[in-house]
Image (tube, one colour):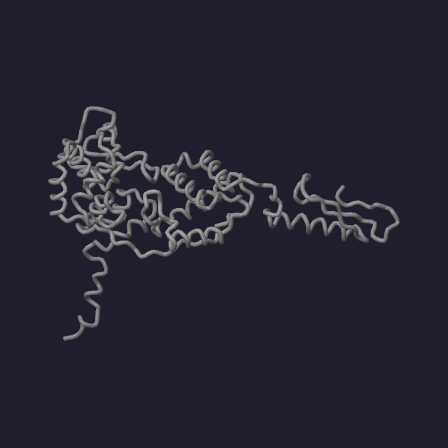
Amino acid sequence: MSVRNLKDGHKKPWLCECYPQGSKGKRIRKRFATKGEATAFERYTMNEIDDKPWLADKSDNRRLSELLDLWWKLHAKNLKSGAHAYRRLQIMCEQLNDPIATTFTAKDFAHYRANRLTVGHGKGRSGAELSISSQNYDLLWMKVLFNELRRLKEWNLPNPLKDMKTIKTAERELSYLTHDQITQLLTFVQRSPISGQMTQIIKICLATGARIMEAIELKGSQVTKHKITFTNTKGKKNRTVPISEDLYNEIYQNTSGRLFTCGYGVLHKWLNLCFSDLPKGQATHILRHTFASYFMMNGGNILVLQKILGHADIKQTMAYSHFAPSHLQDAVLFNPLASMS
């Protein structure tokens, strides 16, 4: 028993003996005059461990990289972007000198992040300085790692980055191609040995708002009469988008396999060659932005656009709302200059 009467004639005969960190952990012994005091002390000591679980895990000497590998094995390998996140967090572990996970704190991450931004330690393996959005991306994935391991009961401590906030960034301008630029691009790619494939991929993106990789990985089985069904998407949900008869006739092949052999890197290169002044990071997404922008400019419904693009949250789609002809049009009617004769 953890509380017992020693009956040794001592003025404090009641002994509380407990092991808050488990049978192999530190033993706590304290004597009391009454059983009630001893029982209350036992309850207080054990409750403190329940309220602060990290006090009971001093023996967990796993490195941050070990948690990362466990997260990959149990969860991340099944995610669409899991492999990319895993590689990024591996680099982070290396640059943090792979600390013991129980000692890793928000302060450690904050100083690490500051060094990456101001000293240049954040330069990736390609030599390009890490952007703030990339910093935020890494923070979010590290939070996900700890949260998921807690959910799986593989990590009993609090998430050390729970209160860590992302760095606010200015809202990016979403560029799109004009009609002349679309013609320019379709003409420019004719110089390529695989111009036919690139033309079809570009048209699919412009006609459906598909992501580049969704179009590149398209299979014949996904193309039915006047419709394309995109599978294995970023949001893990299939979506079907109607297409014109002309586009259907152009891309249809009597096969259930891949329609294109063109890779992402090839198309990315040709887009950059054609438009050298595209905003950073928008080279391949420019086609998706172009579809969404024209959809709204031509009077499309934003809820329909959300379904076409496959956005889980309408807030993502609202980035295109200002392209609607009537967007905030009342500003023209009700400003003070409009009421002056």
